[in-house]
Image (tube, rainbow, N blue to C red; front, top):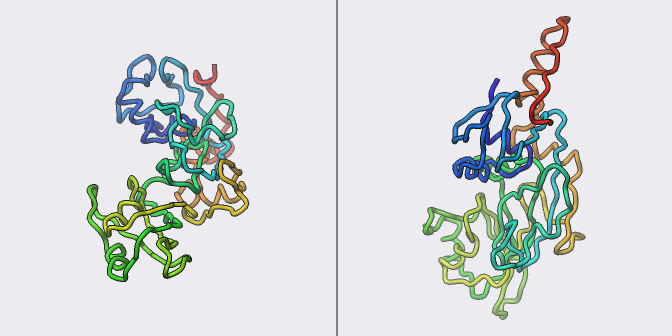
Length: 280
């Protein structure tokens, strides 16, 4: 049973499915010596190379899925390498062997707060996909007066350059009536580029500070200082995976389906395991 090439690659932690699709389009991936194209499917015995290097795929049952919470400080860019030499969110992450961190979404350089990273590219893809509807919550310090009219407009929806956007909720979070700046908590589904800032800008309000404090059910731990990370508990990782329909992952991959067929065979002798060319 074959699987989509980008899905198999994503499971290795090389990147998100969307990122890997760009690699395939750019001709960086080959299957059995032939340059791959979008839409290709692969079998367990196929040899996959990225930039000429053999990719060591993982049995879905044996893969250890890891998720960390990172407190991004302002001034860091959400990129592995920055042409301008600015610090990146990957600089402070723990080092991995045989895989790498995949970023779940992005925050602009001036925004701080909660970022998720995982070793499972398929999990990252599903967490970012709009269809799963994960709510992002932010603490926002706004310069200017947020009238009821402006509040209602942002809750009803505002047409931005890239489509309609709106907040699901807006609540007061501190500040004095006389002060120039007030804090609010806002929530929304989706993650368009600088969406929170642009929504406020549509009402002629300037965001002075922006902090992501929640992604889905995961909140920014108060003890997690800027520039630091912490592992998500394995039970919480499983719960997160279940929310994006990865509960039965061990029976959805190339090797998982083969194992399920073996279990259903009952007393039939198991097939001799074929040596995978990926594990050379």
